[in-house]
Image 1 (cartoon, helix red, strand yellow):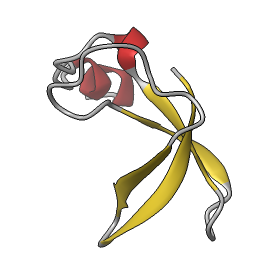
Image 2 (tube, rainbow, N blue to C red):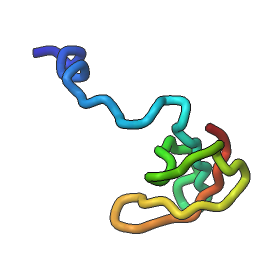
Image 3 (tube, rainbow, N blue to C red):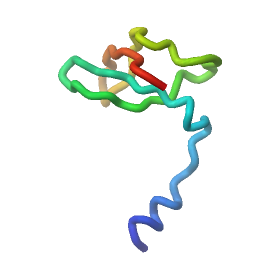
Image 4 (cartoon, rainbow, N blue to C red):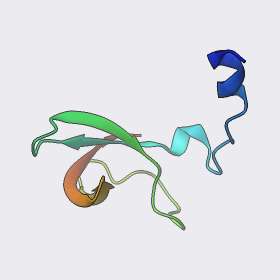
Length: 67
């Protein structure tokens, strides 16, 4: 089985793609990561707001940079 066939077998996310938030991290990672909004969130992304997100075994503070 090829990699492309394996990727086709991945489950589809339970949220629409346009609701993915871009979170900017500046504490050791210095990059922008894509995250789904918190469960039950209804409304636009809170741009330029601080959020705490899980990153491995720790949680870090980032800023919502886009949606």
